[in-house]
Amino acid sequence: MSLKLLHEPETEDPLLSVVNLIDIFLVIIAALLITVAQNPLLNPFNKQDVTVITDPGKPSMEMMVKKGEKIERYKANGSIGSGDGEKAGVAYRMKDGSMVYVPEEGSPVSPRR
Image 1 (cartoon, rainbow, N blue to C red):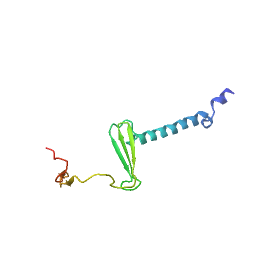
Image 2: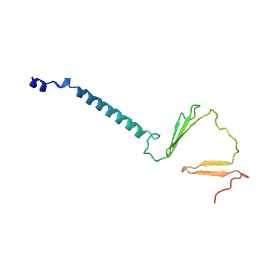
Image 3: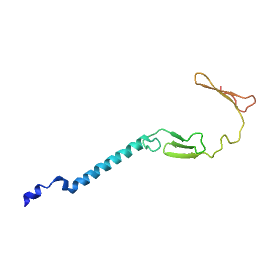
Image 4: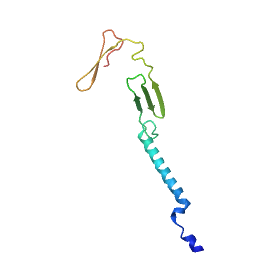
């Protein structure tokens, strides 16, 4: 009788199914860690400031800004260019990519020296 217990087939072992479940959970955990590492907003080890803009230029536009550990979310309200103010000058982009700002006559902004 004791010899019969030693020769059980491996398919009847209940521990094999537990080992398979552990393997599946390890694969799921690895996939989640890769997803978190690739997402700049969720990565806790990323020390850089990140800005993510979704649907740019559309009424459903949304902007998420991560500064340090703080994440702020801004949603578009549908109006473009609203606000109070006045024209202070003109900016020109040069061929080399630099920007030149020319203030208007009588503007309160004085040129830098």
